[in-house]
Image 1 (tube, rainbow, N blue to C red):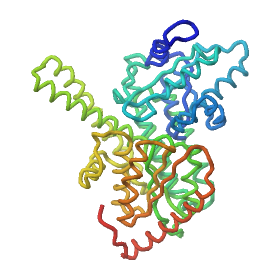
Image 2 (cartoon, one colour):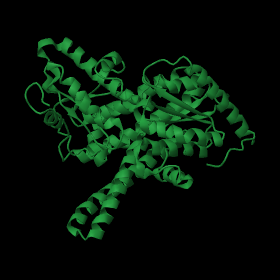
Image 3 (cartoon, helix red, strand yellow):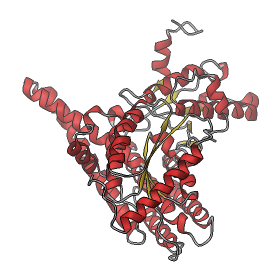
Image 4 (cartoon, rainbow, N blue to C red):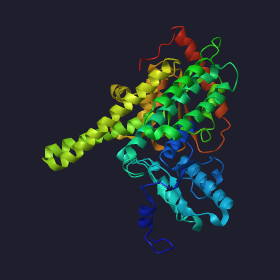
Length: 457
């Protein structure tokens, strides 16, 4: 199998889908979590990379035109986004369009999930357009815990990594501020407008000062956002049933792909907490820790002391990274929770104890199923009134999760709803959502009146 220019197809994929320094390029980023991806783009800009968040969900038909339908739904969405952007950019610039200026940013994951093959498939599609063949794809990978040393100069990579993780946490906090305040706001729309202003202030601060690794201004802005948003809550409005969302990271975070499920739940009377982006990053670091520890034990038993030293240094590095992540995440959440009672994030230790205690699943299996099952049990433990599992239609990890959670939460008398998406409008989804929220309200009333006899998770 060869490409049109005679080079082996696999060699071309290896050379054009890789990790490399993106300095001086226009980095094209797919939209996902609205706050998170925009703060990450500002992190790249702080280090001199012209990052652009592409318009999303405007060309799903393009994504479907170049896929078979067997791919994961986010693959179709993101493929449509990149083709839509490039075709419009080519029309706008005309003869001055130069593909060498652009880099498409599409992270990947190892393991059984189809996500690990998105960037390869999408590169094959881009190669079908002569004008886009020379646009490479750059990625970060779960294989090395999203290490950034290869995508920018080595002397700047550690600072970029710290800044980007801080911004992931801040974006999660902004989401949780919105979810906590918006259902109870004095005037409809005031929370969204205020958070958009706060996002702009944070992006300006990141781009102007973020590279200096002094996060005090970012923390100050975030705390001011939380303190002000807390005043938007009308104390006369009764607390709604709290609904926890778990599931595949892209679908649960991308409002267009999940048909704005958060706002639908709020419309029907619920208060939402969605699983965070930091939870996934922390899980990847934790998984890397476990794998490195296993390798170290193996080389110790084999007496391969030279190799052991190499792996031991990597394990020490990941331990320091996990400590840094826990410290920074706790720092930001404590600061915000002085003003507003947002839901704390799930810790990896707590999730694993839930899984191991019930012998339901294991982190050793990997995939998001571990986080979704453990996260749902954490929601139950913290007196949530319902759980929604959001995932792409046919998603293997989320199907496993549904098989475990549905009977388990039914036994615990905690309302549960599967919400698979493939871009189609399901006519019975509104009925299912209304019924689910009705059950969640009943659960809340029973819990407040001491009549909830669910099993202790």
